[in-house]
Length: 516
Image (cartoon, rainbow, N blue to C red; front, side, top):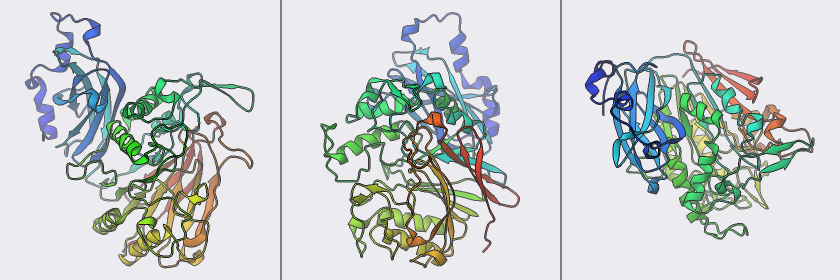
């Protein structure tokens, strides 16, 4: 349905039996047991200049109903009939709302109606999102990754996942979740004794007491995180661009892998990944294309000065290996040819001043998988080998295509850092200098710092990680991090700040755009 701001303001009572009128009609008396319930709040995401995805979940089969307005009082609001939510889709509803080009701040309200009686309505849950501008203006967004990992779940006595409230209070225009949105391979214990003698007490659900294998168990991983009030409040106010990494399925997975983990009865990782992908897509506001079902890499322009390119470094990779191959093959793939071509073409097409590549794994940090390597770097600081061959080709293409002002944002390694890459320090020198900023975890164990492979010439400008000899620190220790990016609408200066869970700025890097 396409509609303008004037349409929204003019609809009013013309919308017919508006949700508010139905819910307060004195002649309707319904047993509470017949009314659906909104179980996990609301969220939005994948916003474009004139459209956005809206999401919510019911406790039973129902019809999703949404009210839309350009004001918080919902004056002149219109009801939009959404999809039926069914057990086959995890009872989650997603609605792609289009025709929003004249609206700056969209306010929405979600209810569910019983399928056997449309008068039986759930209580409403409200959300809002700011749409990308058509003209230059200041923009702020945040990014991070890694939620409920390494045994650290929701401890309500400690306020739950408070970093989400810290990010919300920064009033960002949107949020990039850089992957590991859940830890489907990380069961929770009800209590964990901390090093100082205190007890961490997890909220525990059946789905979080074992590794996920069935589709419903994967769904339960996402539902668990949404029990946290901080996260639900954040989702209602800040639209999300979501990526996935490994823990939405299982640790360090790759297509075609067969597990040797005795915790799993299902050893076929590709089957597990299919279930994990379905649960991820059901529980995030990721827009799906009929021509590319299941696709996670995509791009979003946010005004004339900024465009975000969301990568998928999991779906198309070859097997984890010693990563020392001297020629590019299917074994050395990380993005894969189709995604590589899409990214190069999209960067060339972009007219935005700043091109932000949202990468779910870092470029130069060594991430091991036993005797193999999980990420790009292989610990050999010489010429590119293995997966580094693909990244070398990409960095060369960015230079040759004269693409300016590329910034990489990532998570995955559970500490925060600012890395500057330069050919002057590199073994491979056919690229232009660029920045990579690392953040996370949001609510998981903290590790690091990691070893840098100097093939592409990275230099640590800043990092914060646990003290030497300490690892898997709980969120209560304070080593939880997110990044904040501020774009000045007039000068187009981009300022990247690395933040901790309390909202303290740890490091700030101001970047001036390079003009063509």
